[in-house]
Image (tube, rainbow, N blue to C red; front, side):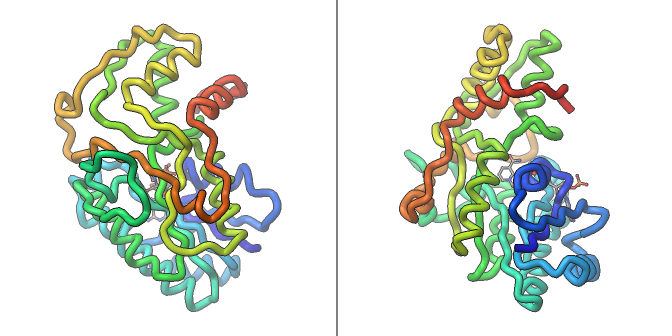
Length: 280
Ligand SMILES: NC(=O)c1ccc[n+]([C@@H]2O[C@H](COP(=O)([O-])OP(=O)(O)OC[C@H]3O[C@@H](n4cnc5c(N)ncnc54)[C@H](OP(=O)(O)O)[C@@H]3O)[C@@H](O)[C@H]2O)c1
């Protein structure tokens, strides 16, 4: 397959470039392919003639989305409609990466694909619009708490703060499923190769709070977990609300016969013990 990646400089985009060896992959950064610009999309499609477009481009700063609603709706929402229209025209299938933040977090238990969406932030609303505009033939991957050793993400931040000997404060009233980009990409590629469509949850197994997770990272990296102390979401006074519970059950993935993703603690251990690269 010829696969076009948007948002190729982001952490998920980079993981596709790193991992996919058995297909022709064309990863475009925002400067080459701006998903909010129809001319830029058609230029890239003419150039790369993709069979599949994987949209990893997004405004992922949740608080910035809250303070810049038009920008959020444009990039995370309407741009997906533009991509879907052009994908259909050239006969390519569309894969849209979406989020656990489409849920309000009030459920007592993990969310399945059939649960009602009710975003409580502009980021969640804009990503939900993206799901709706992706079209009925698209594969929509809802994932959560995405991390890797690439770029600016929470795992890199925790490791850096621990290294510098800082005191870390993490919320203990928000739970979810940490998901490692390499595990995510592995699973998404299996779904693409099997031509699965519709909404599907893809996250690492297991769930945790940010506080417990930061302590687990400290233990795993050989740092002192006492550097991490618990706070509440309300202590942070951030512009955007976060769902208290956004644990994703990967029910459809398993029902379709695909293997569940590894437990996040196994992947965390592996990524830290294999890391020979300096943090970026
Ligand atoms: N990170 C998470 O915890 C998380 C959780 C659930 C779902 N997701 C979803 O996973 C996907 C990938 O996220 P990520 O973690 O890889 O985020 P990321 O590292 O922030 O990457 C997003 C990329 O999109 C690019 N981008 C922004 N505006 C664009 C535009 N108009 N056209 C093309 N590209 C544009 C960004 O470029 P610039 O840096 O140049 O702006 C960046 O390279 C997103 O759809 C996100 O919503 C992420």
